[in-house]
Amino acid sequence: MSIIAKLEDYLNLSQELISAMVSGNFTYRTPRKELMQKILVTGGAGFLGSYLCEALLERGETVTALDTADGEKIDHLLSNPCFRFVRGSVLDFDLIAREMKGADMVFHLAAIADPKKYVTHPLKVLEIDLVASIEIFRLAAEQKCKVIFSSTSEIYGRNPNVPWKEDDARVLGSTAVNRWCYSTGKAACEHFLYAWAREAGLRFVTYRFFNVYGPKLDDLGHGRVMPVFLKQFLNDEPVTVHGDGKQTRAFVYVDDAIQAMLLLAFDPKCEGQTFNIGTSRETTMLELAKIMKKVGNFSSEIIFQPHKEVYGESFEDIPRRVPDVSKIKKFVCWEGTTPFEEGIRKTIDFYRARKHAAVTEVAG
Ligand SMILES: NC(=O)c1ccc[n+]([C@@H]2O[C@H](COP(=O)([O-])OP(=O)(O)OC[C@H]3O[C@@H](n4cnc5c(N)ncnc54)[C@H](O)[C@@H]3O)[C@@H](O)[C@H]2O)c1
Image (cartoon, rainbow, N blue to C red):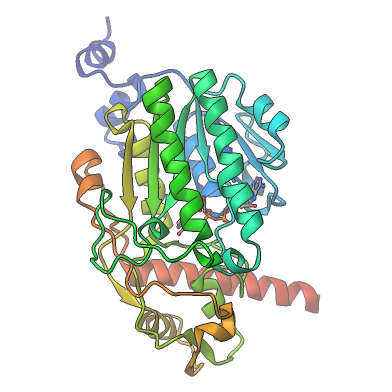
């Protein structure tokens, strides 16, 4: 028996990991000794899904991404023989049943996660985020497939007592207010997971993300706050901060979030648990605009716009949104470590280069 093989046995680590440690060429990812797993990632062509697929392939897994999007964010993975992209909807239950067959794990990320759509398309939000999820969980329970579910900080609603721990109360408005349909849909999914675990032994982990950001987040000018601000900054237009700009968020850089996702998904002690994934750095929207302006060396003025002009009367913003991250720290020793200005710079560089490439293409 070689020394490496003996160490493998003794330490319960893989030969590749021990060889890397011995040679000094070692980057910590997630401990593994198990065989390559067959993994389905719904929403795999989205922001988080695209980074996740890449990280899973780097771990040596076989990955199928299923998404209705065009696949631009996963273009670079298509030539990998361990990767497949299936363009389709999680509402196509026959397709889901086919793709889940033989899967060891499903990362369920497919969702409508654009706040404007909670108000304009509540039915679509509920169908995709809740109805499709119920079917995915049922199939997973039937097939003994582990579910890794992407939930949200919206779960806590407007509970004023930040930072929020995973078992804190949910404080929401009336069901007549469409704005809460996303939060309620995701919370019902979490209930389904606990119920399937209790009654059929389903293995699952739930993540509640708090404003993950980075390159490839959304199309410039659309979706979440950074690409919306960035379009205005890059076009030298006034940057519109909603409300009084005092509302806070706790941003976490995408590389850190992906590391957290892997640590939680592959660690058996995290099964049956729900985790906040975020940082405790609280940033107001006005501060965010100012930091982006400084880091990107932009000259746009920053102005304010009432919420109801953007979302209509029924929208209600969450004044403070901050996670308590002690649980994830305790379970997997994870903490978001990318400095905020550095993450912002990388994000600005990405969108700036993209805009430049688009302008050059049009000019050429
Ligand atoms: N990024 C964050 O800060 C954040 C915060 C809270 C929760 N989340 C959750 O994490 C998950 C991933 O979010 P993201 O930031 O990558 O958003 P995203 O919008 O980039 O990704 C969601 C993906 O789901 C796909 N999708 C939508 N409808 C579909 C359908 N019917 N069938 C198949 N695919 C469909 C979209 O095309 C998109 O690619 C979502 O479930 C979201 O609710 C993310």
